[in-house]
Amino acid sequence: MTIHLHNKTILVTREEKAGEIFARKISQYGAKALQAPLLEITCLPYEQTVNEALQQKKYAWIFFTSKNGVDCFMKQHPPIGNCRIAAVGTKTKQAIEAYGYEVDFIPSIYHAETMAEEFLQIEKNIDPVLFVRGKIASRVLIDAFREAKRPFDCVEVYDTVTNQAAKEKLTTILHTEKIDYLTFTSPSTVRAFMELTEENQSSLSIPAVCIGTTTEKSAREAGFKQTIIPNEFTIEGMLDIINEKEKGIK
Image (cartoon, rainbow, N blue to C red; front, side, top):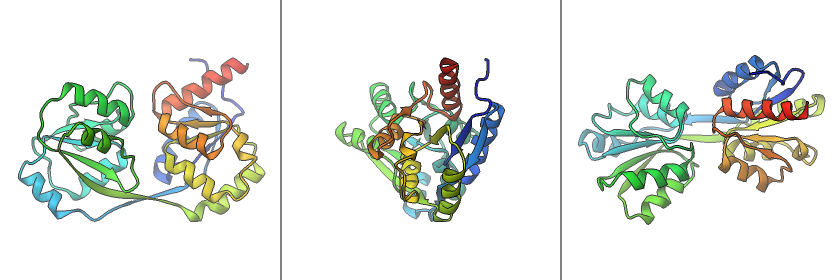
């Protein structure tokens, strides 16, 4: 693949640890990566009732919809035994496998709508499932299972909050750098960007590269004039679509 991102500047807004990984990949594409970690991820205390349910083998499936959910759950809860595991995408799947577990289901498109639709079509077992969630996670899976009258429980294992300490850095970057692309990897990053930028009208004209359809919807609702989503909802997919766009410009 020919790289077309030389001399381009891309802003990374995801939380610091994951943002560093993204920034390294951007550099591999020949672009300049600027980091403003707009989010902080905090693991929440474990829920004893979930531990007891896991030990009693109550759940047929556990659903993970983010790497953060995997990490915070695995660090605090007991081994999940014979539960089958569903992952929303490849990054979540890799995080699960790093803890020594196999993933039994992954949707063809990496978002909750497809995950719910495809799972409910193929899995007829009506034993309860457990959704591992963030505190402000989408309700798509919950609503789909409730509508299908399928039993489930939820456990919130992490919280996502705006990193107020990043405001000064973000403001400096936006005033001193020519940003070619903004990157948003969740609706939370979009909301944090809008919260931390007091005068954001000029920023709304910068192309916003969104990891998937839900994030793109948030960006459009926030007023971004040009949004871009990849074919595959991963950070690699985001870089590929930027590269393809630059190829077309050239």
